[in-house]
Image (cartoon, rainbow, N blue to C red):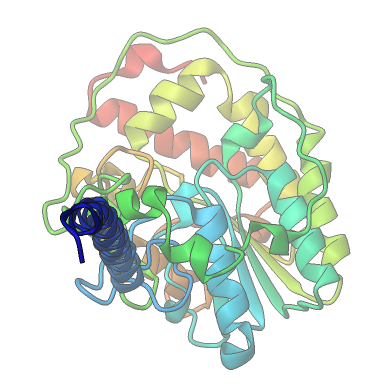
Length: 363
């Protein structure tokens, strides 16, 4: 072999070695990046599975505290994965004021609490329509009736929808999402969207140990508001979806200060709420009013904002509506309208006297 051939072979090897080295580096980088991505995906999925902020399969395993980041989704997930096992025969509808009404306290029935933040009657109608279409036939319906439903204001129309469209589509959507990871981390850090309560391991309302302090007061009367009496018909329409069910309506409690400031002071008590509540009481089987000023609604320890009441108070409401207590509130359907109106106005007048605010009284 001559020197020229040896030199050629030498330089040929030198050219091959960098090429092989480059391929090895590329393969190493691919494996490294794939491992990192797999680790990140596994971490995100693992955290989200343990916390399960959309209640897709089991809820928060780590701390047992479940926060309501989107009740329309999470409660729909919960309903469809538990309805066959629990064989629900009772439905609870309402706004955020009804969230802490625990279904387990209704011992005579197997209730599901479908209350949602900002929920109003037009949305309840669509939920009821869709539940009926999916074969749900409750024997009893509890419906929280907020006076805000009857206040005239611009509202966005709610088109009919299939309630199943609210469900989380798959485990990928439930666990492999940065948005869901944000909810999981907020849950672990105790950052709740609700200052006063959360959901426990059984997905029922629970109060935080450090309950916000409610500091009520009286403020300058605001402009009067208008009332839409036709909304009563919408509440009545709920019966068409569950024609064989017993309907129990109730007005959730509000602090006596809130009643004076936001309702009586804005000419919504005599002119709106009392007549529409009584009219609705004639359409439902039973109707309770827990908003009437009472020892419960005058006690600032029972609420964190004057509008949302503690689990303890709501547990008592469940007993009242099942007939085992009559500690507060008034059963509207047992009175004439004149009697109901007088009892309610007398309670407001007494509260104003107790607080030296009779200048606010206008009959």
